Amino acid sequence: MRALRSVSPSEALVERALSRLPEPPERPVAPAPRRAGGRWGWSALIAAPALAAIALGIVVAVHRGVSSPAIERSEERALALPDDGHAWMHLDLWTDRHADEPAVVHLEVPEDVRVRLPDGEGGTLERHCQQERCSHRLTRYRGEAPLSVAVAQPGRYEIHVRHESNEARVRERFVLTAVRD
Image (cartoon, rainbow, N blue to C red; front, side):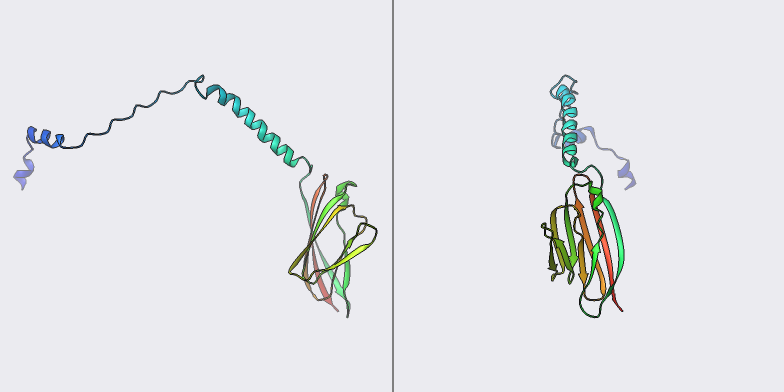
């Protein structure tokens, strides 16, 4: 074995072996780099600022209506329940943030919560939520009549209110803990 390891193949054998191998594919020639005046040079210089201006215009148009970021607040209240019936409570909304502009109000209450909403003619409408969550919407609300909620059973109730106008976006969360004495 040692003697065979020291023997090298003849030149003819090496040439014959290499001639049987497949030809390697030709390497593609790399294209020459383009100059600034080429196909995309000047148009790219013009298109980039134009696209940036369009994107800025879209952002301004989307956020034009509301001038301030959303205001968020959370309030917890205890509510004493009577022996029979419901206990009502007014929701003190931060409607003064709208600077006398009408706001769109979204009110979301859990099951078994009653709601009194202004009817727009000086009166009120009463709604009773009998689903897992109920949602109410008021348009052109100016805070003239308070929103009220009522519960009859002890427990913890989360009420979410969102009101928006051109002046402000406000999100309020009320957590009611109702207890019977």
